[in-house]
Amino acid sequence: MNSNDDSAIAAGLDPTRLPYHVAIIMDGNGRWAKKRMLNRVRGHEKGAEAVRIAVRTSRELGIAALTLYAFSTENWQRPKTEINALMTLLKRFLKSEKKEMLEHNIRLNAIGEIERLPGSVREILQEIMQVTKNNSGLLLNLALSYGGRSEIVRMVQQLSESAAAGKIRPESIDEETVSAHLYTRDIPDPDLLIRTGGEMRISNFLLWQIAYAELHITNTLWPDFNRAEYVKILKDYQGRDRRFGKV
Ligand code: FPP
Image (spheres, protein in one colour):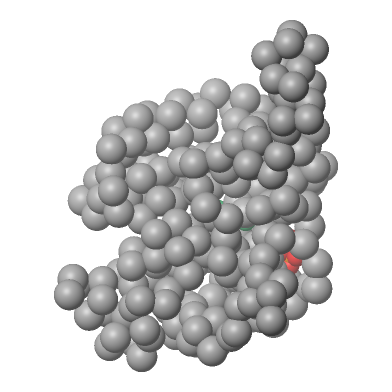
């Protein structure tokens, strides 16, 4: 038994039945700030602390992959000041967590239109992805300038180009081919999708990949998300009967 198993058992979880891949829509930073008459950016700052907690908890419990919806393609339509603040926060997070990722065997990955991010964010992102690429512990997958539909459009373009060039036959395209042309090609689909902030929607997140994910929506605003709630959600997940459409 390893130390992850010990942590999971101590938290009241069955280490053999943890979700392999957890995905989170981190919503509610703005409302958290508004409730306190603070600027929205303060909500994002507090949200970045909740990100640290979610990463640490995932790693300690032995979750293999954690995908966080940190910035959507739609988020580019927010005011410039808010976008800049989010990019600054992201940079700060990456710089401050680099040591933690190296020490704890975390592998960083990013999905989305990374080329649209400011150069300084891309640089630090690529540097950490490079130095952590051989790590075998938690895969921390950040969705940045990510949109599920645009990911699907990109996949269709790639496959149709290959077909037009005679490299693949259209009739040979199956679900595996599609999965292999998404940003998440190396990662099994999420088993559990958590959304904070109480909204009952998917917001263009991992549209193809969540086909059989268990959904958990909590009213907790993202900056208030903590280890105790994460463990509670995992316990709820372990009580579910996953049938994948079968009886
Ligand atoms: C949604 O809150 C959250 C975001 C748009 C971005 C998530 C960003 C963070 C958690 C902080 C930085 C990220 C990292 C990885 C360090 P909202 O503003 O839509 O909240 P609202 O629905 O209450 O307005």
